[in-house]
Length: 146
Image 1 (cartoon, rainbow, N blue to C red):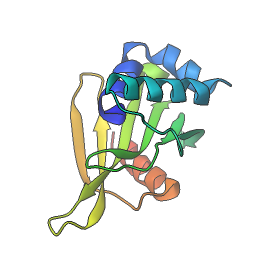
Image 2: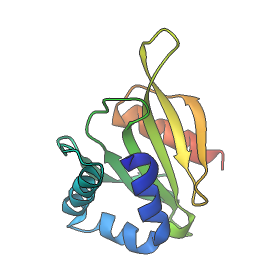
Image 3: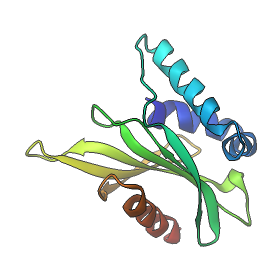
Image 4: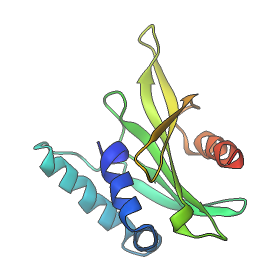
């Protein structure tokens, strides 16, 4: 729910303000508070262990990589990457996800997705292993295609 509903809605309501929060010194505490709010709204305790973020730069794009607590169910996400062209600012941002999934044999796999400002969710198919470097390489390929 966090990666697929709460975060995209929160971000796209005011991209510049959220980008500023996520770039500031209180970014992680703010993210943890939002995570816990989601848990309370769902009437469950969501552990924030593993929740982390770091700034990223991919060629002429900048943003933040968010590592989520380990997913337990399909389609919870391993990562969110919020990136925007440096020349255009956060209003032109894209939110790329690396989602936990299962193949037809029930084996674990990942799927690359993207949330758009109009609420559309794109599925780019199979993703890389759930590690930051391969995920960021995949994000760079996606944003390079426009």
